[in-house]
Every structure is written in structure tokens, then in C-alpha cells.
Image 1 (cartoon, rainbow, N blue to C red):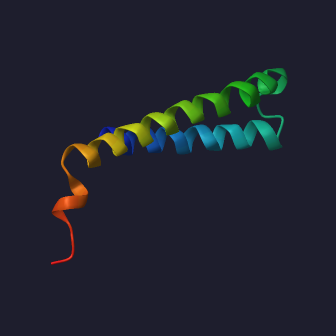
Image 2: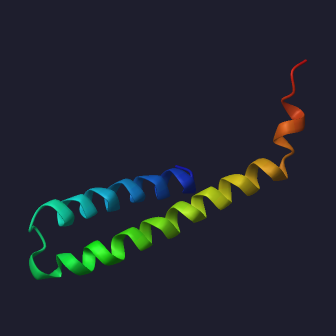
Length: 69
């Protein structure tokens, strides 16, 4: 699997954990820390995936190779 696919799956798992912590008392008193840290971690992962994909498509001249012919 590609690195970005794995990071997106990790993002999905973190989102599910965040939802459990936010809407239930599944993590007990540690839920407030999960609610604070999890969105920051998700934002960092999302930014890294965006930056990686942006660089990948700009490096191989994606836009010029796929013009209408």
C-alpha cells in the first residue's frame, strides 16, 4: 500500500477514536486529553498527505501531460 493510503486509513481510525471520546465516556477522565490532542494530530497528518500529493503531481508535470488532445 502507498504511504498516503496508510496515512488516510490512520486518519480514519483517529477520527473514530475522536468520535468515541467526544460522544461517549469510553476513555474516562482521559477523554479530555484525547479530544484536545487528536484533532491536532489529525491536522498534521492531513497536512502532510496534502503536501506529499501536491509535490508528487507538480514534480511529474501532471498538468502538462494530461491536456486535452
